[in-house]
Image (tube, rainbow, N blue to C red; front, side, top):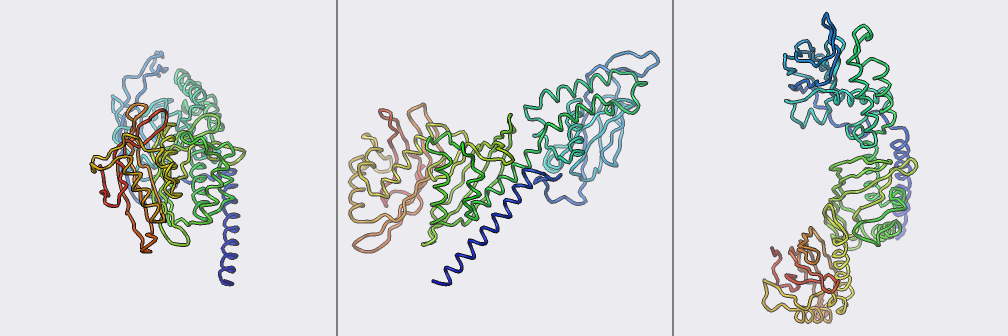
Length: 476
């Protein structure tokens, strides 16, 4: 007992120390963000790439012929193309090709002809995972590359998503206008290229100043939240969940419910594993962001080592900047009955709530609650004897002769057929102990597609619920 107390004290101290470290990370990530952020990955050392594409320039420019005039270019053969130390020449149609370009996480392709200069940024992600055979260089790519370059000068590694966020559209439009106007000026008024004019550089700098490298900061915030769960650090969970938190599919979800849920979870269970993957980021106005997130969790009960959760959720989490910290303020599933699929709505939540009531009814051996969620017309295609009365009889007998040790239900997917019918792909497991024999009976994991219907405003099970130990484990 003394050893256990000493271990508990050491563990708490370790948790407090880890909290201090994570809090330092929070200040660093949300305050003074370093150049690389959390977007770096192992550099493909020595790897080289072949890049090709075309120059697209329909804008009117001031020509440099003997009789200067405003027109559009039809011959691009004077454009020199450069990427790092690799150079080539565009053909008359504007097509270009660059061979053996070394990897760089800050690669810019330049296309220059006398006073006209165009740019295109090629991200590390594009180099490694995208088609490099048709990279177009135009005024829009030039504007984004200029903003990126200005961001580097300001020690901000702006991602394409940062720059393309809707709230910066007006600033980017002003920049592209400045570039187009610069191309109409005579060569005599341009000392270097059109991109070196103060009207162009100042417009690019202004957009960069308005941008925050939110993508990398949000990845860091997600990483810290994941570690908070793994380390069972309730204080950090409280910090990273917004006081205004809610779920579209569960009207009872709020900050207090999240905190109470994880306080109970941490006291009785441990995470075996927890993966937290960002699939997609959309930056929104007013310091908000939608992050499509995939989370897989395996949780075991501390006393018995029983796996009580083994589940994967994919969801669109909404974050917002509150003070200096990004906090999750909408749509994070945390209960077993919360949706595992994206775009869940109120109907999803209603069925999830019904599942929660069924699980509670089985755990508490409450026949009335169980009966309430079963349709009077209930049938099973795989068992001709299945009726509501027979199901209730089996449940009553089981409750009288057995004690429920584990009762789990997980919704994998819901397909709605109109507003009052749904096919619920789910899995479940029941483990009981026979009171007389003192023997455990485990159903194993059962997979099924259960049909629900809405009767008089109440979602009820209508077809194909396996409820006997003799029913098949997989029902399509």
